[in-house]
Length: 121
Image 1 (spheres, rainbow, N blue to C red):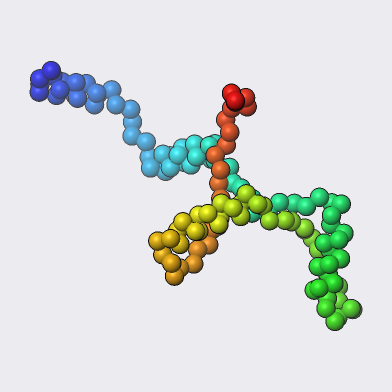
Image 2 (image 1 turned 180 degrees about the vertical axis):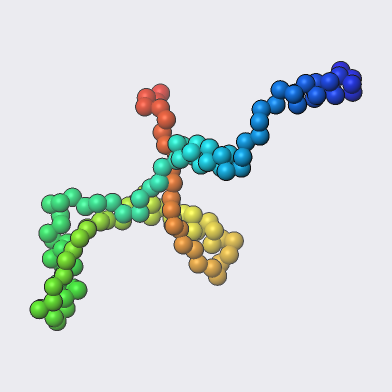
């Protein structure tokens, strides 16, 4: 293959090239592909309804303190997700290895979705 053959092929490719895709469309397609592959790990998980009463009584007793006439409403009871806590701890520990006198805030944790239902053991 010579230089002129390369120019001929390049010219032919330019004639058949599709219309350019806008940056916004490319970003939207990339975001959609990433959303299909990853799912967010929630920081807190809901608690079973049977365990609500004990938690609500303890929380309202502590919050009320010495004001028995106060009224408290508990709307939601959640427990920390152990998977989220473990990933947060590991990630911040690795980051702190480089910058010892810094603080880190992990806002979101994602995990890769399992695409196959049956895995060979």
